[in-house]
Amino acid sequence: MNTKTPIRTALVTGSGRNIGRAIVLALAEQGCNVIINGSSNRAACEAVAGEAQDLGAKALVAMGDVGDPDAARQICRSGATEFGRIDILVNNAAVRPLKPFLETTDDDWHRVLDVDLNAAFYTCRETLPGMVDNGWGRIINLTGMNAIHGYKGRVPVSVAKHGLWGLTKALAKEFGPSGITVNAISPGPIQSEHDDAELSRHIREQVSRIPVGHLGEPGHIAALCNYLVSDGGAFMSGQMIACNGGTET
Image 1 (cartoon, rainbow, N blue to C red):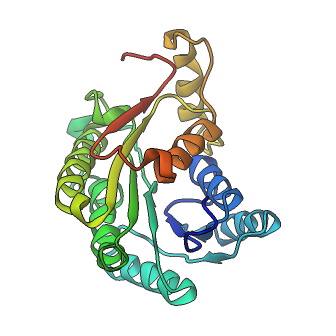
Image 2 (image 1 turned 180 degrees about the horizontal axis):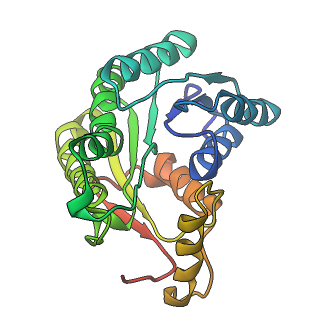
């Protein structure tokens, strides 16, 4: 980052592992203060904080369920209190249950929308006033291919991610005049650590549909985030960038 600018502070939700972890470390390497968030696995988040500190960054672990408005508010405010500001917000936290539509309960539906869509509303609402005051801000929403295609077995996820894409476009228009860009990244199949063996198998099976012939890595998404928050990415806003190896479906 340009050394003449203030040290930026980034909040990355759902950053205890996988894509979120990679984004935290990429931003830390660029000199950002980083706020690591997870809903339950504090040990994983503390480990990421340690890795960020090894890169020379200041790091704060802010645990909590961003799908809960009070928790999301507290997470954002603790970061702003610790570092004085939040300049970069990456809404990465998500749940992606695989379940037939007719078996989806009210609780299933609301849980997915809370984490995959409402959480971004809560965190944006909390951090945007400071970005407006500072005349600079970067918001990145992780949508995934569910925002491009509707998938059977993932109706709530598809709805939430389509909504997140709408939020991205609308906020970009409303807050662009304040020096704030808002973009979405749609990752394709990414190699990651999964507790769910069935989900892991499903991702590996998608390799045959990827033109470049291999799964993506969390670092590919992190590198794209770094570009979007850089000076070079300042003219990109209101976009959804598909990082998926050429996958169409």
